[in-house]
Image (tube, rainbow over all chains, first blue to last red; front, side, top):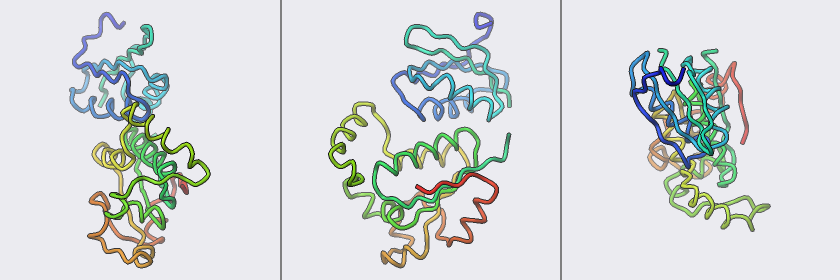
Length: 80
Length: 138
């Protein structure tokens, strides 16, 4: 699925800790259009559960989450 | 899911208590919560212009950990709590209230407070804003 998703913007929050990744994701999602995909790269171990919780709360869609070594790569589709 | 809110009575003025205020407020704001912060007593003192310029204080019980914490925060490039509050206001619906009674105790006027303060209010306003949500006393 991740191979097919066209990434509009990449957000690099490696080295940032809670609430940094969530804050930056919330800001970055506003910079793309509805239907477009944001790629988030994070090293905070809380990034996966936090961005999943954030997406549930805010109604955006998680397309894919992958762990690549110490980096969590999350694809978020702006839903509204 | 929508329409949730988090309200915090910010009573303490030490950095170990103010940090979680900044973290909770910004995390909640980013997640679409309505956030109300009511600064009272030592918390209010911390957002006076004088208090903001003073070196951060830590709870007496954890005093020996203060320098290590500050160094670690700088190594982590972790933002100061009041920067997190400001950022929370940019990202979401966050209101910062100052307690009018405490202002009289400390002899403070609205212009003596940090610029991110929205209004000077009393407890009735805070309770009204906080109704139906989660309220914390920190």
